[in-house]
Amino acid sequence: MLLVKENDGKAKWRYRRYLAGILCFPIWIVGYTILKIKQPSEMFSDTSLMELHSKIDPSKVRAILEGEYHLIELGVSHGSLSDERHSRLDKSSNQNENPVYDGVTATFCPINWELQKSNPSLVPMYRELISKEGCDRNRFTMNMRKISELARSYDESMENKVAGAARVKQLKLGGVVFHESRCGSTLVANLLSASNPRAHRLYSESHPPIAVLKACSLKNCNREKQKLLLRDVFYLMSRSASKEETHVFFKIQSIGVYHIPAFARIFPNVPWIYVYRDSIEVLASQLKHKLDDTSY
Image (cartoon, rainbow, N blue to C red; front, side):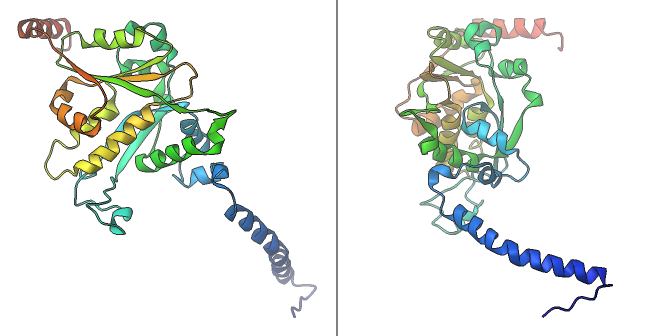
């Protein structure tokens, strides 16, 4: 029994808070129960999205899931793919049987693919397409593994199914272009895009794939972790909300030639080509390029 003096304002306030707590407790229990029995297809609420990263706007995370924001950059910290780095999942399982990469960040922003599809020569490189879109004003970064897991779950959810068709689909990986520098590889890549611009998407020297391939240049790299990360990168970059797009192509930076064996091991059924040119012509083009560049 609580006794409240009429002239004790603080005691009255404590008593009112006590009554409010008693009255609100059943409401809290009902709300908690409803959340617990939600179906998987209902778990993509703004609240659940915030669990990925407390500092990320849930509307931006949803923009990734719905194919409006695209992967533009990858942050692979030192040792992210090494055997020494143990994630929380690794500690509860066998490291060799269930490798899990960790310490990798992913940066996203909206991209207007129409700029490339209308005329690939105007934005021949992915970095130029990003700069045209003003990506610096809308980019944000979050955990790569978490957003990859959520994207895969979303793609399989009922929320992504509209009238029997997927709202966001996975484009077929049509091929990858490896090359030496100054050999005309950009022309080759643009031909892949221009051959069917409405159906083809092209990533020309984008950062995420080469970041993963180069991450295992040093010793003590777990190749299975590299495989999982590269597959997640290609998965995210191959998601599309366009009804017209069907295939995606990648042109890797020239340094990627050292990593062709790793790519072929991870994607044995994906076609790739290597573009090269007469060495004398490559040297002449390099010298001309340096002479034309006023920064030298």
